[in-house]
Image (cartoon, rainbow, N blue to C red; front, side):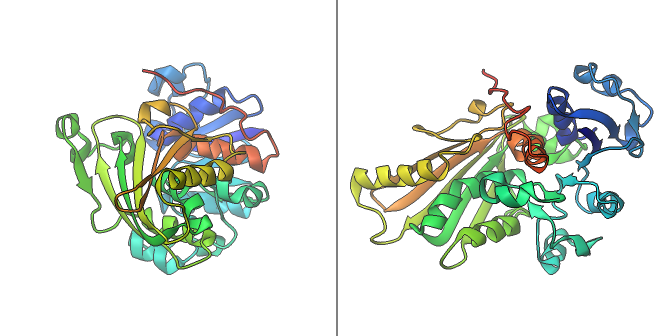
Length: 344
């Protein structure tokens, strides 16, 4: 299977090249990046020197699938002719995640460049949409925050044990902001500092509501996302809170066990979701495609708590794209993604 990466020079593109290099069925044959066009991949990223490819401005080789790591809007524009040719594509940006074109414009402040593909695009979260992903030609890779929040909440919402008013407190490492230089991600600004941002609403919120609304049998969830930037390179940790519905869960320690059982049953066949017995730590997922989830109940307030963590560049981006690619080509879902987390 021949793979091309659009925009290999961003953090997601770099991570994708690293993962695909060790994939036994994928051959990375083309990588683009306009600012570094004409240079060897290993010249720009020495840790990828084993990949003997020259970065080009456009894809110049015949490929079986294209994965775009461009930002939103630019990604859709570059993928449009590829989609028209019938070549399978995975978009790591937000361009094809939302089904409602007006909602896209409201959150991204621009008209969608090719709305005709929104209906056929599949939201690429295999744990919820595995069959749809397997039969798709266009995959919208979920956002990194979205992946963590949706996986943290989906079992509770589907089982109907929590009220729809939910708070998700989210924290991310600096690589989630991308590789472009900006004042807010300079070392001196971020080091020994924690800051909240997008307090009026984060762009990942509508896709979280969209996908959790699909699993809900009751009222659509009302979710508050609050994002924080923390001084580390990789990792996302989300803590989600909601009131338990009266009569849905037994009181006391038995209720805590019932909630854990709901999560263990929901994810029992999922290779990349681990239901943890203790609150997870971001280092436990560093460099892996795993999402770790812990649940409990605050017995004093009857409040449900779910904590999830993942590597924003792997399960939150490049690893999930590879997982989706495997499903699209009827390969073992875990192929090329068996890497365990790095520690310390």
